[in-house]
Picture (cartoon, rainbow, N blue to C red):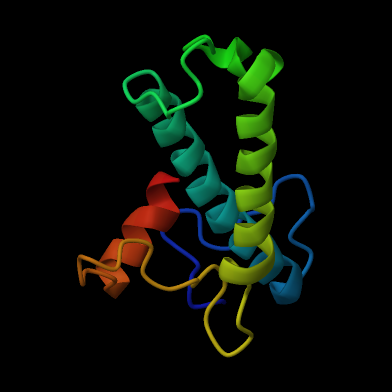
Length: 123
């Protein structure tokens, strides 16, 4: 089994998506990449309700912000940042285990096997 297979389910694919180890590694990398992006999105939603970027004073502080005036510009900028992260930062290195994109918080040196297992098991 792959090194990132976790107990208690191990190599688990009830819908048949994980037909072999290569498919499992691909799906694991995607799971971690998109989990991290979702966490950044959630943090962004919380931050934008507290912090107002200059020039965005008239933009609502809710999910409709991307539909109004300068909010559209900010939305396009956010999509550009996400595209850059997808293309340049969160790129799977074949020499590393699936989903190992390095330490997401470089200020804390806690990228241990235990922390990776927590990330995999807890989403």
